[in-house]
Amino acid sequence: MVTIINKLNHVIIKRMFLAFSLLFCVFGTFSQKAATIDSLSVIERDFQFELFKNRYFQIPSLINQANLGKFSYGEARYLYGEGKLRHPQEYKKQNGLFAKTASLANLENTDWTFYGSLEYLNTRIEDVENNLTYCITEYNSPYYFFQKTTGLWNHQNYNFEVSAAHKVNSKLSLGGYLNYDTNFYFRKTDTRNELTALKINGKLSASYQFNEKHLLSVALGTAFFKTDSELGNKFPENNTELTANYYLNTGLGSYIKNIDNGFETKRVIPQLQLHWLFKQNNWDVSVESTTKYGVERWIDKNIVRVEENDELTKYSFLNQEFNVVFNQYRKNSLLSINLNAEYLKGKGKVWQETGAYYAKNFNATNYNFKTEANILFYKQLLNKVSLGIKYANVEQLDLNYAYQFDYQFLEPTVALGLHKDIFTKVAFFTNLSGLYHHVIDMQHDPFAANNIYVEWIGNSVADYTGTSSFNFKTKLGFDVKLKNENKLECSITGDYWKATTLSNETVNYVSKNDDYLSLVLGLKLYF
Image (cartoon, rainbow, N blue to C red; front, side, top):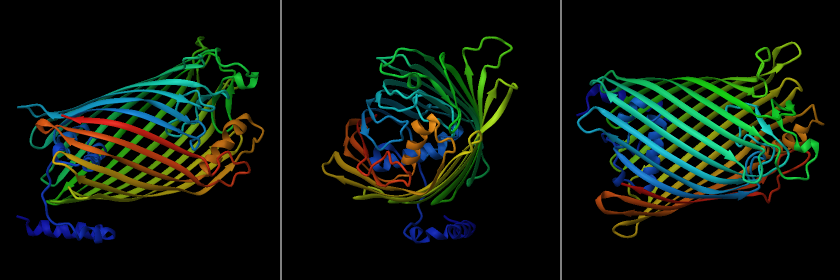
């Protein structure tokens, strides 16, 4: 029975979310409980897995409080993508295989909850320009290898995650998390850069239940990232000295040339997470803060003498993120509202042999804001409705050349999910979404206009970044009930991008005919 105090608190919180009051009015009182996989449609499962990942999985001691009951699944996917509407330093064509298995379970007759997953990816990637580090850099770091000549390479990824939570008593839970993620990039026809990348992420956390309503959690973690590159001189012919050279990019127009023996990259990111979860009978709200401070170093393997400095670059950054999730529950529906804000500030330095000091040469600042509202109608033909919008602002400045690169964009999105039982044990589903990437403003001001970075990279990246585009995505397929409450999900996912408005750059590398299509064929077995 709901007390008078609970009712008053309910009214106060509902007034705080006045902007969404029209949505709230359709929801009544329903007590929360963990969802079971076999009771959900595919669209409902996808939403609940996303909620599990964003709200509970990030704090390992919270997995025993999760929105999902125990589950186990295995899946396999075939990946294909091709098109010109891509970032110039990303692949234009890909095909490969992906496999994953994951499980969440309580250990019988104990107070332990465990989660584990294993992923494998094997893809062939084509047509990447001016990028020998094989991926776009993270946290706005300016450092990567580049060379004019394109080629083909293979990418293999092995990703292992394990998380555990132990309920010490009725108030306190402790948790731990470990992620081991390794990537191998190699070429079959040349030896330009064979790269091994390793990420290890570990966390320890504690959650304290003050009362039935308030749950406070804290997590401390460290992410360690290391790459080891081996450069070779066997690659396609018809290259000049300029195009055959290896370069280490250090900013916008700043680079180190005549690289010949590879580098080690090391990045260490300590992080602090604070999480508060407040529960009422038919709604809950969580607020999470994640603070990261990282340092990335590029170490020249050529340097072996103690008196020489082998760390040629340093990049430090502060990353702050806030995430708020509000859920309101009813017997046959769920309203979920998510608010996310992120700030990143980075600074780069390059070692100067003359004078023996680190010179500041690169600044980066990012702001991101995103909000999304989802309504699930359980087992209905109209299974889900979503509305959202994202705003991003990116600012980059090379201090050597006063080279400025800034842009802002908006991304409104809308999505519908449909579900229909067509036989006793077979259901059809489709999830449709549309997104418009609208560039608000883009400033590209390269003072070093005759620089090879500007000619090879800067101009084409600016033109792509200043192009507005439309995205349509759909996932459709069948969900089949098997024996012993097992389920088989068969799906095809299409993701299509099309240029709509070109940038204001003097030379356009992107045309309105450019597009990109990716297809994913998937099988997923819940057991």
